[in-house]
Image (tube, rainbow, N blue to C red; front, top):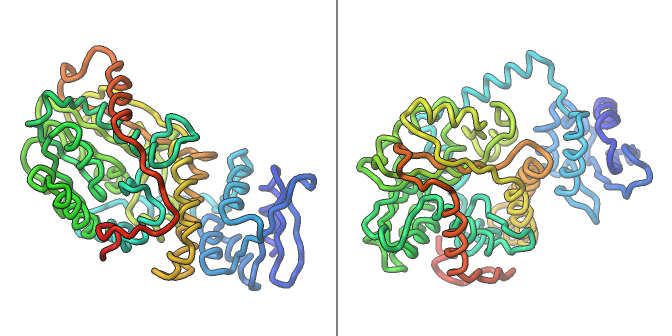
Length: 429
């Protein structure tokens, strides 16, 4: 306990953290006047496991039941408390320079995503059962940042507004888009592709490396009667052929890996019509390039990497693109993740029945940790609108908000219900 005790003495300044060791000994950190948050360690090795590598050890200890958060708090409260203190400058990284260099090299190597590895990485995260994701996502299964025009909006409303904003930046129009072809790279469960077809009549090809996502998206297109216009393929974006008037990439480039950014933007440039527009929606860093933390690489997104703006713009510039518009979206993902966490926790028993307690705890830790990265850390979202010809865009960006508002007003947000859905399309394997 000595090592963990010394680390927490330096770290916790705001709020109060109580640690109850396995033998019942109490340790207090931070402001004694603040309301305490208490955690309990259940075995003699838990403290050392956490202290040796806090960013990995804490998550593993919680997943394995070696770290328990005492009611009325939960793991989200603990993570937000710890990271609020870490963001103030005291830090929790105990690694020396050589260990940091070694881990950075491993993280960089992990981003080399050749075709077979890219496919296995995607399946690792996205091919959990359909029932699992429906327990915490919105009705349309949007598994990327929602756009909260008002922080009090529901997740359903915010996800509709996200799709409206993306469509506006693609500069589609009902009068001119009926013959257009749109490529949706990393199409998820097909919600955005179906949205674009429904509102603009365009043909959409969605591509993904997650087999169940593609099957589900195909079922949705068939059920909507638009399978001839909205198609989904299990294919690597590098193998797509043809020419497209618009390209959208939502939450995809985080899986590409920085060594492949040039390849990615060269390929998409080849696929886009000379007067086309591409919209890249991605999580991004507020600072310079970095690495993906070990716990996330190991348990959640193997091969994943959150890019810095400098990396994306440099890759675009080198591969024939002009940047038409950039927007930095702050805090929206924090609100999104907080709601996903709330919904997942409400469905704790169902998730455990689908998998087990360990996976439920792993996802709690992931969602809460990701939220703090957007709330107190260095994560935001980027919208990068890129073109091959600057004449593809109007003189001002006023059209974006005008069109986004028009589209948002067209769709009423459905209510989210705690009860599990019974629609066969959402619950079939």
